[in-house]
Image (cartoon, rainbow, N blue to C red; front, side, top):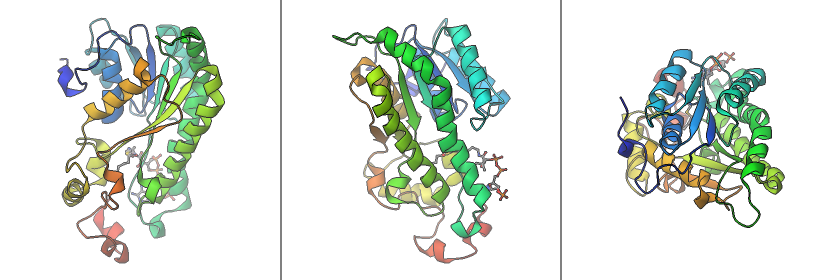
Length: 305
Ligand code: HXC
C-alpha cells in the first residue's frame, strides 16, 4: 500500500517536475535513501536502487514504486559498492531498461562505534572502503551518463530541465572530529573532498555535485544501532531545534538540489540537522557524559555498540 505523500514529501513541490528523469541510488534499501528516491519517484522519476541485501532492496523497490502509478523502480540486491564491476553492471541495466541516468545519490555507508584502541587497521579500512572508495566507484560507474544527461538538458540561456546531478550522502562529525567514529569521520571527510573536486572538474560539462548531510533522523537503522535512549535524549536537548529530523526533511533537500531551484548550487554541503552540528557533543553515545565514557577503558567492549 502506498504511503501518504505527507510522510515523505512536503506539499510545496509540483507533481511531474521529474517526469522522464532517472535516478540511480546506492544504499537504496535504507530508511533515508529510500525516502529520497520515493520523493523523486512521486514527482515523476523512475529509479534503480542498489544495496547489499537482496530481499530488502527488492522489497524496497516494490514499495517505492507505489509512490506513483506507472512508476518503474528496479531493485538490485547483492551489490557491494566496494566492487566497481557490480556497480557497472547495475548501471548498464539501468540505462538499458530506463533509458539513461540523470541523477545519482551515493548513499551506501557502513559504521559502528569503536574507540581507536579497539579499532583494527582492517576495521578502519573497511569503513573507508565502503564510504569513500564506494562513493568514488559510484561516481566512476555513473559519470559518463551524468555528462550525457547534462549535455541533453543544459540550455545555454536558461536551464529549465535538469540533469547530470550527483548527491553524496555525508555526515557532519568530521567538521569537529568525533570520538568512537574516527573511521567514519575520516571516510566522510574524503567524501566531502570528492564532491568538491567533482564540482570543479565536471562543472564545465554541466554536471553538479553536492553533499547532503543528514543530522540524527528518527527511525533510521544507523540511529537505532549507534544511538540509545540516553544519547537520543542528549541529542534532542543539545539540538537548537530540540528534536530529531525526519526522512521527509532529507527528501525535501534532495528534491531542492535536483530541481530547477537548485540549478546554481554546485560544490556545496547542505547540512539538514536543525543546526545540531554546531552544538558540540550532540551525538555522544552512551549514558555517560563526555569524556567520562572515553576514560573508561571497558566502555566500548561492555556496551555492545
Ligand atoms: C570494532 C568492528 C566492529 C565494531 C566490525 N568491526 N564491527 N570493529 N567494533 N563494532 C571490524 C571487524 O572485526 C573487522 O576487522 C572489520 O571491521 C570488518 O568487519 P566485517 O564484518 O568483515 O565487514 P563487513 O561484513 O564488510 O561489514 C561492514 C561493517 C558493518 C561496516 C563493519 O557494520 C556493516 O555492514 N554495517 C551495515 C551498514 C551500516 O553500518 N549502516 C549504517 C550506516 S549509518 P578485523 O580486524 O577483525 O578483520 C551511517 C551514518 C552515521 O553511516 C551517522 C549516525 C550517527
